[in-house]
Image (cartoon, rainbow, N blue to C red; front, side, top):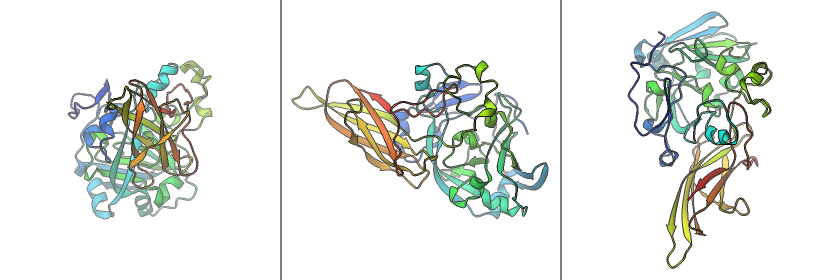
Length: 370
């Protein structure tokens, strides 16, 4: 079933900013992104490590294994018919979101993403815990659920793999799905169709696209993308050579930190005054490691000396992004606006983000200019 070339890939929206063609990687302009509560298919970023192929849903199978032993093989139509459809609204975010900003501090390794590598969608499919219970096997002793996709070749391994804890997988309230629909439409190939993992609160690297194998395991996935590619190394590790012997000493990433971004700043002159008004819009994302969704977003036009509360215009459940907007009067003709988010358990977005070689989890104050 492995797809081996780039010749037959799906047609793509011309609204995206292309960051790479083979494999195809692209993100939307962030100003367009925040115009929608649910991110439209054409504006959802595309992150790939190999070619994309369109597989017919009726002939696509998922295999569940305990170790090396297969205990269930089931098709996507069977998943649709045998299990109740579950839905969750959740933000999908690449670990490298805002990498370009981190790279301006010091060079990093990876695609130079801006701040559009995120989207908020309604995902529909089968609860992972329901599927695993149907196998009838005992989960005792298994600490991890490993996901694999052999559907396409990868840049750095023979398949794409990732894992989550068994606790995360089996906690019904964590809403982990095997999704076959996005925004009430059949999941397209570019976004992992016909079947992908949805792991709310976790970075996108764990939301395995074109998932075809699930393994209950005592260990994390051994795949490159779990063990090497998405880890935060100390800032003194500033080269691939220095990192070579350290990957195994640091944990794989799960969640991303509290964050906010300025998406657009629209200035308007004030009547009979040399000053201006600005209308600012953006998004914020909860830091699931600390717990609690975004509770407030603030903006500043004086480098944090004072802050103005923004109005939250959209938030849905515990896994969604937060959209916000604010108007500020009496500002000069040009300037800089900063944003910071706060969460329900007292977390505050830091002024500066921590640099790391892979350029992941950047969450310094958001910045916009007019």
